Length: 260
Image 1 (cartoon, rainbow, N blue to C red):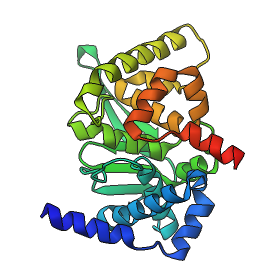
Image 2 (image 1 turned 90 degrees about the horizontal axis):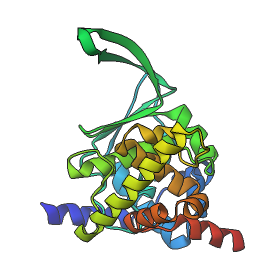
Image 3 (image 1 turned 180 degrees about the vertical axis):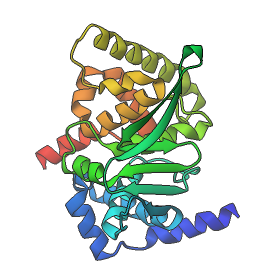
Image 4 (image 1 turned 90 degrees about the vertical axis):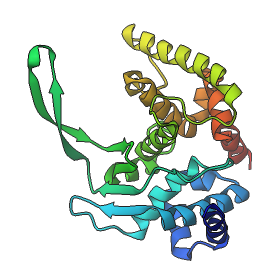
């Protein structure tokens, strides 16, 4: 069973992407343009597997196109470059809305009070193997790859985080010996973000990262790929932990691109 899956994936990775898909990557995915030729080839192979194994579903009247599927698949696969991966083992479906969408929420307050409201969302990740995205926001984020905001990277980071069985800001690390340093650095940086916000100091990381350790990891992932040099310069230990986990050095990648 596992041998069959491995051989099927190897066969898919060897297949070249259709020319139309390559044009979509060049047009839509700024991160793709920053990759080396070897990284682009690896990403294209991952996209083939991702497109074969994951189900895309249009919601809210959205008609799915290759542009939507390829763009989202590329962003998801960007997080997989350079390391062993099971292609988001728990992820089954990607639900795509045309715009931000409403979700009915129920909050139970002390004293038995129940408050129901509508929450406007641009994306979410479920432990049941589903990622939900607003296509409008995905497009906006891919148009600017240096603002530190990318909803697709954020939600796919949550899927990586959940592979341990719990979404708590500690994904499956390459080696068990890495967890102690990971925990030390992330706890210190998470506390630092909360303290900066409480004292109204400017932060590189989005304030949303202070919501929980899981959101902190997802926010740091966005910043790692979108503002890597700033993250490296202002949060060096945090950058190093992300570099070791993702097995990528996007700051060095951007510097090579600058001098080429």
